[in-house]
Image (tube, rainbow, N blue to C red; front, side, top):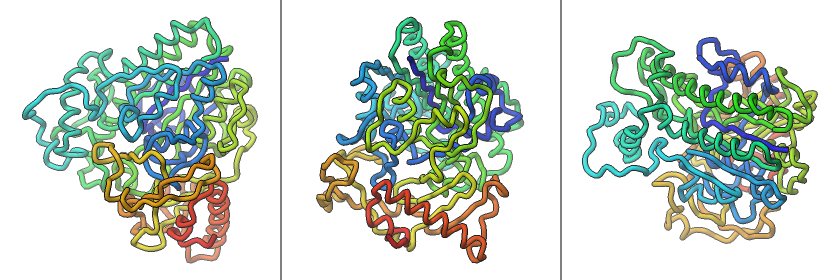
Length: 501
């Protein structure tokens, strides 16, 4: 048995043809849907980038206990478990966060790995001195305007002129080299993971030509994490920039599908195509993610799976699945039992006949809303007070995202206490570090409940003062608390949310 996972970053399902979009050019995603089972109710768990990848490894949520960070010493890593059981695991990626302090223990869990440089602000090529940047990069229009990340990105772009020079192209080329080298062997797992279509939406002109539109404003392809203040034509331009990058992703996806076709790999190779989360392109009046509630454009993800043991293709499934289910699915593919700490479930039954694996799912970001869904209703529980407290992080690896993706600040570590182990930490005590309770404080948004069947775009939150909505809310709270207990949530999370344990 072999397995391939192709992972994109920030893939908005609503811009893909298999999920109903009729204007983007993505023929290979349409072709993929014909060869796989399409999951219609797939949700994130822990947000954003590295928290999502930690649960990809561990098969369990981590946002209740800490923010962005590495794989911890007590974590059961899926690729490492495969490796220990005789399955060669290989990572080909341009996702540069893997090689920063806040993510530096992921790639070493694989048997072998290789990186492609140059995405976003990856500190790659050195051009010392003043750089001449477009005006919009310095005036607040562009995400992270005026920051070293933007300056570095502008340097990196100089080294991607031809299609094959882009980091994504090199990542897929590395994946194809692995396939060519190992196509006649067995017992391996290949993870091809690209940072695209994450912002900035930098793509080759060939793909921009697919989306002609009228725009004569300043350079703008990197949306900031805030409310939309731009005019409609600017928002439309940004959507075209994203679509061009999406089409570039589609092009490289087709290269893998071609290889599988040409080498009859569909007979014995599991294929998963997924993403960590979606992205807002002006929907709900917001750009990006994290700074606002996790609407479906962010939280509900595209997921395609081909399992040769089942043989189902060109079909859709409605059962609620999450990112935490991918590690157990891959272990099951190779006949390896998942660790007790893994709370996800193998998706073989869902793929075969839509057999459900859960009644409800939990998702969120550390310090933000805690969200629950049963596949129809989405309940977003806000902090009980504007202070968004108490909030702590639990870790043995005190690195984080932000400030150069470096160590947790000494002033926070100076107030750390030693905490008792959780059920999943293999009897290891942990540092309990004061959390950044102002970073993703959702108290201003309040608690919200959506019916995604009657209101699929989440434009009309239910009135929680009505008897019907209160009944649904009580049921969602029960499901939320059951899942929090199952995940051994810290006691203060209940207090922060105004819930009684």
